[in-house]
Length: 340
Image 1 (cartoon, one colour):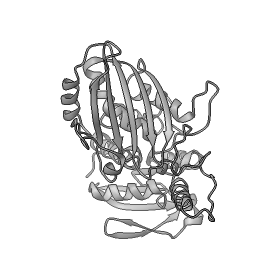
Image 2 (cartoon, rainbow, N blue to C red; image 1 turned 90 degrees about the horizontal axis):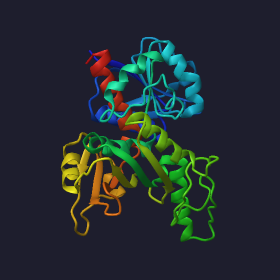
Image 3 (cartoon, rainbow, N blue to C red; image 1 turned 30 degrees about the vertical axis):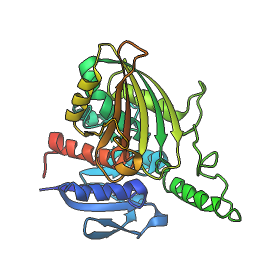
């Protein structure tokens, strides 16, 4: 016996990826419904070898459905998630709306699976920000061994993190570089993204940080440990898919780079590719379509007593969004719903 599953926002990048991953991982689905806004009503999407037509999110009845994967943004989630939850359907939400709600668990299954039991307070589980998800997968096993005091992270985030409009803008601007007559000024981003980097993701806050940077701080504390100090600089780069992060970690106890490498090799969801030679590391292009979070460039930081540096790369549409949501559904099924 399987589950009755809803995917809301099925025509978007993340929604389509959710469907792909549900099929790839053979999630036990008895019945599936794909929902979209009225402007996308009737659009066909793929689920394994099936082709499904989208239904109207606004009129859909969630009664009798087990799990709903939401990829519809905060505004729509505010309307439809409580509706689904009230009908008895557990919502796994990819937006930022519920991430900082004390009554909603924020889950990365490799890191804090036990926290999923808190879902019952609102019948909602939050999926973390894409940049946070891959980082905490790397931090948790190291924190368990040597206690992390402080993290300084710089991100190199692909345009797919800004949705289809971000992908289109990079594509159009790149073409226009070679055809100056067809100028494509910045629209989705604040400056030209083609052949450029932009140290600005989401809105600016009073202290000078951006909302994306604040998210990494707040979410790491909620998922891993509230005592960890985090300093983040988030940068948009001209890459279509795949986020990369340069992470500097300060520990309470000494952790040798060789031991850290061994710990990460054994950790769930991580693949270590760390050879000190040309090409002995992973880049965003190579991680696309993969489930793993890749770790490279592990080395001691000699400027502090107990420090390490590492390079972290992951497919942001997968581990940063759709994969993590499906993994949450799998954890929910194993620990709570127990079907399939």
